[in-house]
Length: 248
Length: 248
DNA sequence: GTTACCCTTATGTATAGACTTTATATATGA
DNA sequence: TCATATATAAAGTCTATACATAAGGGTAAC
Image 1 (cartoon, each protein chain N blue to C red):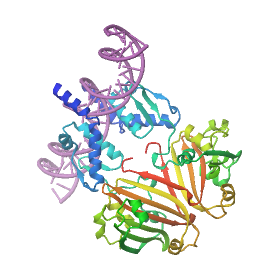
Image 2: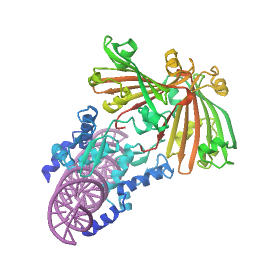
Image 3: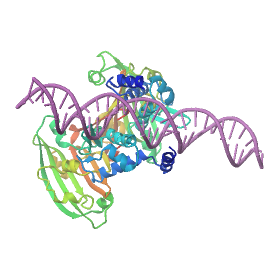
């Protein structure tokens, strides 16, 4: 098959491998939200036709995305975009409700503040926004058995996630809703220990100056930074746990 | 090829796929230390013969391990076990020296304590040891420009890592040496904010009761728990940063 | 001696085809 | 009606083969 051989060559000399192209294409569609969680993606055979390649090549790309946790694959059913992007099994600190309920306590949550305002300078830098941009600010408190458990202070960039504008966070907390509904490209966490400032000590009902574990998280999609959140946990009661194995 | 077909069938009905078996075998050899970092593993063609399968099947396994970061693969040279297991790019908090030097400061380190003693009850539980087992305890202080930067308190289980017994930690710090030389199966991190106790405040030269970020790490190989370490960083000066993408 | 060219080696990519496994859908017979 | 075949669909595994690519060595021409 000389024609096929030359076809292969011309494609290979495109410098980047075909299965990698396919992988990136699919990943892009997922993180951009074009293929939302639950969406059934084309069958291997169809994608093979689409890219003019063999099924094995498509299979290689999809298998990798499945291992990476972006896809769920089922025989006969097909391949589906996986539910919310969990923040890697290693450091799953998104799900405050689960955290509370796993410890056998009752979870509840209260929205303290929800307003639109102009960004501050530091925030504009942080989220790479114009100086006069408008953001939505949310503050809420997560309870464990009616004990304050975590104070969440968040700003959202409406430009990067317009669909959030219509959401009232009376039932679901912002972090829960966002984890389930907003796809992201990359996330950065910063973890720091601080002394509780005035607001935190009052809200969490702990003495001013006592110790807090603070996690700041910034997530990004292809339209820019979506949100920045600060989660403050009281004292040495809270532990972040992360498990690793060489391969995962 | 009917004989081949039936051979395939009989293998496939072994319930677990061949490439996965190969992957696990290689991984086991690496984490057990049988194939140490730098070791050249057999060529694809040889492993194919060894397992009585095609090169593609071996390739699938090795490619995955390479993506997972356990192997380095080079054309013409072959495939090598990758250098020290870094603690996943996401949360690389092992390398204190690098951390310091990346911030433009000079790194130095001082060994404060090195002794053998009987385990305490809590430690025996933690590392799953006999009540009367002996452990090696190490304490040291990492400096950033002659400022105390991190206080390390560590216990080592000689049964799980006998080679450590001969190492004097006068040049390399225990954490550096262990990161470079001790393969591990799994690691657990716990991150917590605490108020500095007496020892920590004196060692790190900070006021008693001021805020500390403490990381506790426990690593395990196939012989059991190797070591437990507590790293204390002073105040809100220290931040743990972790970056995520959906695939990595 | 250096350049140009070819050979070798080991991994990398891609293909076409065969068979397996899991699960649904549909028809068949008691 | 219900259980049981049977067909079908899609992913999973594996093979044999082919060519590409990277890196090194060797050799002959200049």
